[in-house]
Image (tube, rainbow over all chains, first blue to last red; front, top):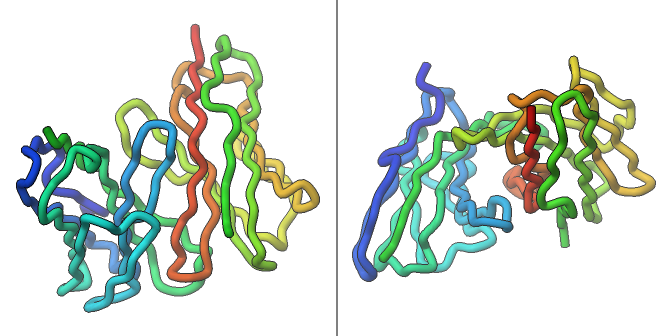
Length: 114
Length: 114
């Protein structure tokens, strides 16, 4: 099993460009999450999904959109990148059931917006 | 509002020293779950432990131990006889009932020097 994977691993964008980050999992996770990690701020939730076809906003959703058309994939889109979106992005998934289940994280995507 | 605070931004110790990482949380829920994750220099996030709000027993796993005290809203992590391989950023997190989202602390960067 590959677990939780993220594509790409690194990306450099210019201000105003768009891109999509792909998260894929083969662990049958019902729930999936996108976080961003910035120095001194821990990880903050951008958007999440509680099942195929559903999405919901997290703590810092502005400037991002998401889609979960298939259970195994969770896409994060930046329509018009800004320097403030320079960050490391982590995708995570977890099993259905209680909120006690741990989340499994992908390896991260390092994004730089110039 | 739910919140997790890791007041120690950076800790530096010499190998074989014991070290405790502090975690204080805030929540209005009576049932909740706390987690610790490790982020080594390679960048991935590794799940270490989960603790539910009804279980105040301390837990020990090899050189790692966790002390959960509801009376002080703390969930501290101790590494005994630290090793260089313990060098990492450690995150404490609280699981939110809504969607099982994780609320992370700011992280503590532990540096273990030989």
